[in-house]
Image (cartoon, rainbow, N blue to C red; front, side):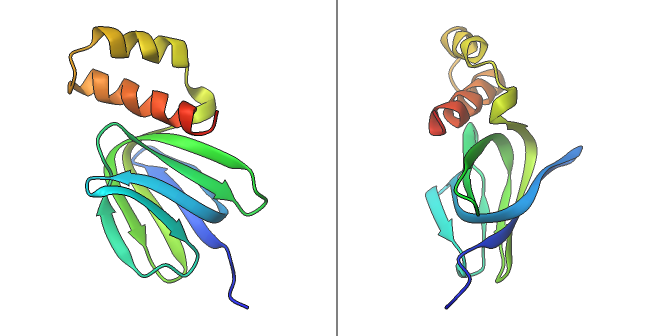
Length: 125
């Protein structure tokens, strides 16, 4: 029976946010939302502005990361999320981010960062 998990690493230029085994990953890319299971074909995708990455860990727990820019790299054995900026869902003040969404100009960097953070929180709520 094939292994149903893969090695996942989420990194940004200044930190490594996550390294562990996962069973499922959902990422918002510039070509749409992708769901990835173990043994997925190798690929490279650009992460969408204002997007998030949601993972299901090997033990079944779910978590998410707000990501702004970067790439998703899938190889035969592992997946790497190379984000320009990334933040754990547990570090997000969703009320403050919703305020930013209502006041920032749609499409601005500030708006996209807030949208990313709200999406991450909503993905695991």
